[in-house]
Length: 459
Ligand SMILES: C[S@@+](CC[C@H](N)C(=O)[O-])C[C@H]1O[C@@H](n2cnc3c(N)ncnc32)[C@H](O)[C@@H]1O
Image 1 (cartoon, rainbow, N blue to C red):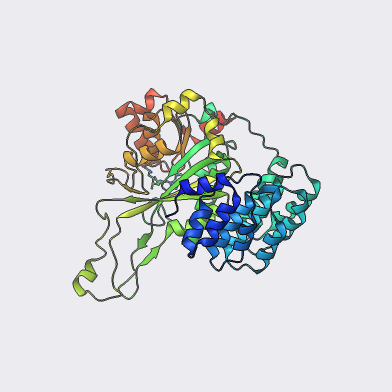
Image 2 (tube, rainbow, N blue to C red; image 1 turned 90 degrees about the horizontal axis):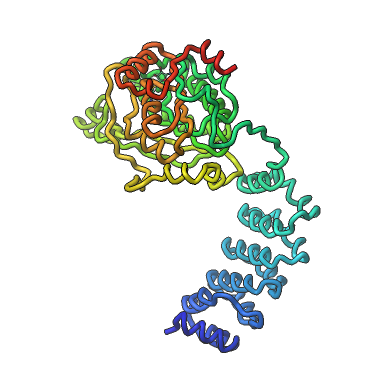
């Protein structure tokens, strides 16, 4: 049986031993095992047998041969690779060929890489771009790559944007990433969110966690049409995007809702809010990151499956829903998460670390919360998890639809700052009464403001 140690030993002894071993193999599996365990190749490695393998019937063998040829750096024979590329039908092998040629870093390969830029496979185009970007400050390379900003594929556009267009945008980042404006700290405004946000500067908040009003499902959420409802939310999240710091998160809690039928001759209508809202968010610069399912122990509305339970006739099946979504988005940026994290001092990073047990899956089993005044409040546990996983201590957490203020109270408990808007006076007053009763908001000097007062502070 061939072992890794045996391969290493043969490699040490000289090249022909490896070539003989490969040639002696009758099955593709063994050839692959040898090729996958060749490791670094010495400078005097004779690669003839690798080039012979480019004609092998088995695509994985061809792939592994190309990979090893790539390790020969400047010494590999580009012509054989191009010949294979022209006739190769296996996508992975084609991609590996481009990667191999790119890794040679040879100026003479530039025209070959330019040709790959018009391949139909976006991953080939990306590999070719990678191969070309090693030629830094090369005018000719830039002339070939820049026009790809109009490429139909989004990954290609993103790479080109990051490489050539970001630096041209002058960003007036008034505050350091970890800081925010004093007039927003621990503030609750009793006003429409869109009116309020007119007075909030760009890049002020670190995290938004919210549960928007459900379309015409409760007394505080009456809209002329579903389209008008979605467009209202679009405006809110465009503004939220503007006031969010670079690369930070928005987490929206929604679920499909049902509007009961008008009469027995009509059907009830279900509105898939998270799915319909999603395109509006990505269109406006929010990058989709995750879907978290909030799993409740029981359904909380009318027993939908009741009718089916009686008649058991297919098509009439309507399950009781015991889930809601937490859709996680990040403000699109060319910066990696590491950049965001490095914006904090070591002490803050240490103190914000998520210690002990934490949720490892995207299904969060959490009991819902019921309240005598507000009909749709967040459970504290849900807020805790979101705040813990998606913010640092001292961050400003925003909830445009404040309700009873759960986000604010939890943020405070977790050493974060909060900024909420809530348009209904009865819920605003409810937050105030809770603050008084629990001495919670008072401690951190929460300001309960009218829009006029907020405007004045903003100035
Ligand atoms: C689903 S509730 C949020 C409940 C909140 N998450 C909590 O834990 O209490 C949505 C809230 O948004 C408020 N709201 C609706 N439209 C608004 C608007 N245009 N501006 C500000 N608040 C609004 C409603 O009054 C309602 O209290």
